[in-house]
Amino acid sequence: MRAYERLLKYVKVHTTSDPNSGTHPSTLRQFDLAKILVEELKELGLTDAHVDEHCYVYATLPATQGQESAAPLGLIAHMDTADDASGENVRPQIHENYDGEAVTLPATGTVLDPKVFPFLREMKGQTLITTDGSTLLGADDKAGVAEIMTALERIIAENRPHGKLCIGFTPDEEIGEGASLFDVEGFGAAYAYTVDGEDVGEISYENFNAAAAVVTVHGFSVHPGSAKNSMINAQNVAMEFHAA
Image 1 (spheres, rainbow, N blue to C red):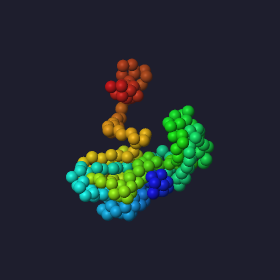
Image 2: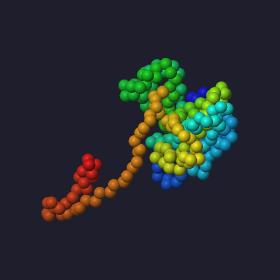
Image 3: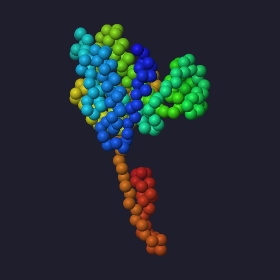
Image 4: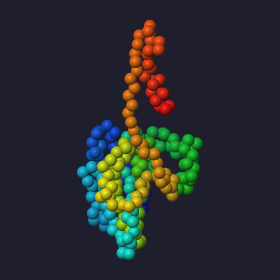
């Protein structure tokens, strides 16, 4: 099966995460895709494939003969999609031999215009897959999941020599919780790649940590008649804090 065929299958599984749930995973529906992936991994011969109670999928492909001493390599992608728009009832649109011009999404009339998204011109002549406009497509990061699964299938089918491969599919990346309960030691990789990028062939070797903090600023309210040099505007304090 080709990567785009797997993508078309995976995006139809509703896996939107929820930033307000407070649970791990944030939505039980993410297990629906996790269970599908476990079965597919087992069908490929990764017999230890499993999903844990927090919806993390793990599997390993043992090293081929003569490659046992190679450092174990990890491949990671996330299963959830963002809550910016619906991820339910996704209807992918396939634009074969894309002409590099504006694309109108049928459900809403939304236009993807190369004048706004210049990278579209670079896709000319390729097969472009979009949503119909009523939902997210979910290629972030089900495209990564599809790529990993397809790579495994090809490696196995072509009997390519390799060291131990460690596979991890995670929930809740879109809400900043994807790594929270990831079993690094159990995963077993010496090095790993997260397959969640942009340009073909692009490798990002560092990124900001996306840490967050909540700062509450309390002002000081005083009657205007006696406020001079006494009243403190909380917004001004917040701006000074931010500027510092």
